[in-house]
Image (cartoon, rainbow, N blue to C red; front, side):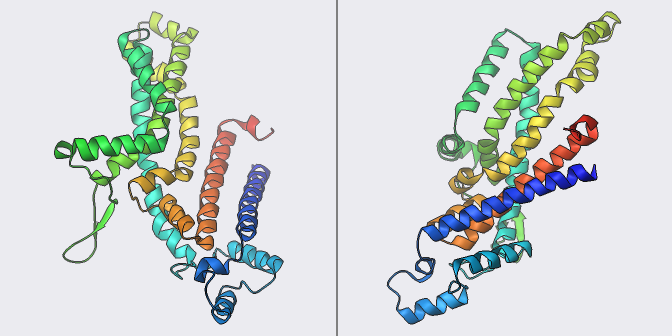
Length: 320
């Protein structure tokens, strides 16, 4: 098990190193980083001061080694635009992405599994065909398109009845007094927009897996012994049918954490995606690289945890 963990961790470190190296080289291939901070009209004294402040006066290989050393120490430098530590900016926005991704995956899993069970039990009926058609539409619709439609429909057309806003954050500052309060309504549309595609996938996976399990011999045996339909579905069929669905949930959670960019930007949700897009607009390289490294680290971490779970459940995975 230890060798398995070390092997997966080593692969994850190589992936992160590749991400950081590639972005570092792309950034410096675009031109002098000093131009991103002060513009190309600044005088030479100002440019030199900026280069010394951010360590841009050193040769490229030296800058690369310094950055890797800082990355290993979790020191990602300072933002070109705000001069704040990149780690501080990432920490303040990571919470928003985590809340949004967890809400989206929870919504997708609950609705997707429930609708998939209904579709399987009502096979070849109007309910089954309606659910399948909706799931196909959900899979094919891009997140940014879904976000725009949901924002227009529920926060503009139906706003007098829904009370939902196009923009807003989970935590909002108190107008009078100190502290923040939670606004659950601001989470509804972003979570639905982000979770629609995995929801559609979970519907199809649950339906197909449950139909396969329901045709198994042990299900027919349970029915022949007089087990009630509810017991057959809940205690026998569904427990085995959910294995591929739960596997897909872990993969989609990693994808949602890494792919919430457009949804966060559309709803002005203060997460890593919104931070990364704002940094791209401002050519804020340290923040861009920090966002990419953080999202890559999260993705790698979730995949390692999933591999370890598989190894615990199935010892054959370790030998592969």
